[in-house]
Length: 497
Image (cartoon, rainbow, N blue to C red; front, side):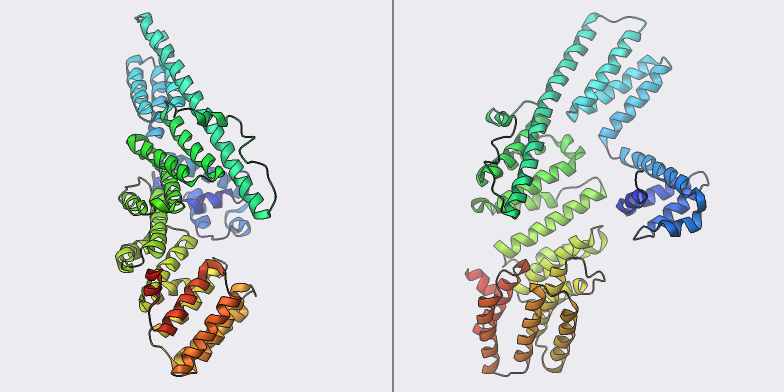
């Protein structure tokens, strides 16, 4: 550990399942009262790390206890992950082989090494194949009945092949990393309005992309990824789409590698989704890709959470922008239960809830919209996505009007929200919120044609003074005003576009 808070950061990053595994592991052998387990439980309860509180309980030996706990967690997580990771299995087999070799159990050593080699070949893991090759040579030289020279020749040939494939893979990895950094720099310059030369002129080995895709599977993945980023820098969205599609297809062609490195597969799949939405002619492909991803079975809880969060977010984006007529319940009833159980950062949950509420809002399901907005508004930490929180408050007021809530009830809600907005930092969205609440007060105090006049004037002012609000809130509320004035619905307006 380098920082005092490293252990706290490690524990907070663990899933519930990982924490449960460590706790059970630590209790083996009657160690339930061990100091490092007590320390683990104490730190786990701290949302914000507090060294002083821990010192008051654990005294001057706290640093030693923390070091032991840190190592114990990593050791336990190695065991936890080895049950699910074939890469970890290779390492275990190599350790086993070394143990058996030292005891001159050469036949048993060979069995372990050949099993490790089989797994490594399925994963196209060239570094592991080179390590296994080295151990097989040591074993060959130790056999009492010296084998024919052809075994050594085969091992030398295999090592040369692995070195060549590894060199090929790293050539594309080097290029990919340079392209990623160039893209980041271009985005920073764009944000700062700085002028730059052609962003790809000075990238070393970009000539690699002029050849055919390489032989090595891992190099081929990097080739497609590099091509996609390169074409993105050139502004060629069709080729961005084509290359991420090729990368995803490459993963699908090698299921063992895809399963082992599922997180990397997901990165390419979601990059493909992003590319699909940036190239309108293929937008409809998003639905089938989302369906395929939704049917995947991740092997760990972190990948499961990432998959759920991204698929749900993209499904809602697709529905809101391209398919508003599909009933929101069809998408969100399966999501609703999982959202309360799955381990997601509160920010991701807020985003999902807000987009779900927008879909219900568009479809005129005011009560369901309100149900999805309430958890956002009641969130204790107001620093989390303040724009989402403020927008949710304003949308809830509109849903209450859509449900027929009027008179004193609405007046009380408007006063309550006005007090809340007056406490907030005075940014543009806050000022808009105070303006909109004022308009809704006028609306609540009018009847008949007077209400339409209030809404018409509000729309006129919005078009003049309140454009380009965060989260495109201005566009949504403008449609709501138009629908109220014309006696139609937000859904009809969006379908007519």
